[in-house]
Amino acid sequence: MLTKVDRRGTGCIKWDRAYLQRLCANPDAEAFWIADMDIASPAEASQAVMEIARGGAYGYPAFETLKDDILGFIKARHGYEADPRGLVISRGVLMSLALLLEGTEGSVVIPFPAYKPFVSICSLQKRQIIQWHLGYDSQQGRFYLNLDELESLLRTHHPGVLVFCSPHNPSGCVWAEDELKALCMLCKAYGVLIISDEIHADLVYEGSRHTLMDKVARSLEIDAVTLMAPSKTFNIAGEHFSYCLFSRQQRAAWLEGRLAALFCNEPSLVGGTLAHACLTKGGAWLDEAVQLFRDNAAFIQSYFQSNVPQLRLTSPQASFICFMDCSAIRKRVSLDAKAFTDLYDPSLSPEGSELTRFFGIRASCAFNAGSWFGEGYDDFVRFNYATDRNTLERALERIRKAVSMLPTI
Image (cartoon, rainbow, N blue to C red; front, top):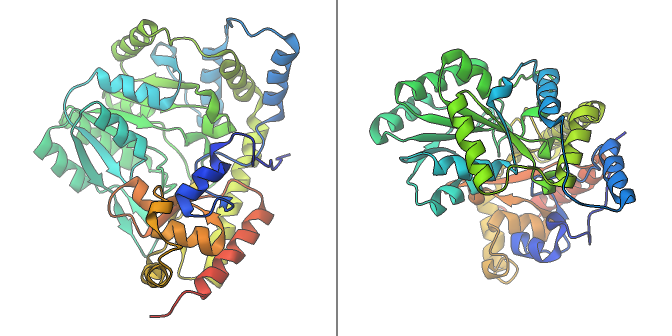
């Protein structure tokens, strides 16, 4: 059974009052932003960590079964038998991405809207970023792969790498296998390495199907790396445990060598323990969590349709985060901001946007700003709905009241 946890005052960044102030101008707002859950991790995970604490020693661990744990979980969850020779364990998806980029050359294509650390990592490595803007169907509330645009960018800029995201963060879209094959064939034609962040892959809703990039890459004989982790899946993101699937063993060996050179080729005691417990014993918990997120997304959509038709989610098919399209209220929010300049003062919430200030001030809800995911997405916020239904109901009612009180045009 899933359990809601109160994370205020626990050193959790999601509920940190100073950060909430910087994000939405209200340090007491309810947190619906950063991508972790207000749901307790599987009981088996907590029990495993308590066993460590009872032992009273925190020395060097030996994890003999972790690779088998990962391969077994992938087979059970995705029906895919990954090649153990292409599996590398690492300390986080972003660390893996940063190291992999060190071993490549050329500019980097990133689909937008984009998870901001992708951009930050490339910028810090002085790599030219080629922005590939996904198509957006405002009627369906769904982003899609604009493959004609991608081919134009590949032909014009000759990049070395595509940093992909599947399922997509921040929209919650799941890409069809045919779309992935078409994307892979383009990258093969232009000699582009695909690095695919699939950290949300285990959280796909019933009715949708995730296809691992490793599966497609191997079938088409292309160079690709699939980055995965139990972190979002089981709400253990603070432990920085992840794994990579390589379609080419030579590149896997390169990353293993780089990790060894940095003495980062072994997981931490707690990280490895949590990963083992979750991957081998967390299946029932995960099924229940995915159903909760699917139901929550449907509930929000239904509530907006009936009560706040000006707002809509971007039809999420996976995970517990998605964009919320606020374009229909954008001008009215700007009028509110002009009337109450002190409340909306951007210097008091530099990590936010006009929309996050509106939701923070008027509805006591903290969301990620759409602009955090790239220029041109100011009409969106990202909504994290990994919480219980009662919390959502109260928040949606506050949002309804806030929108109803906006000035008219």
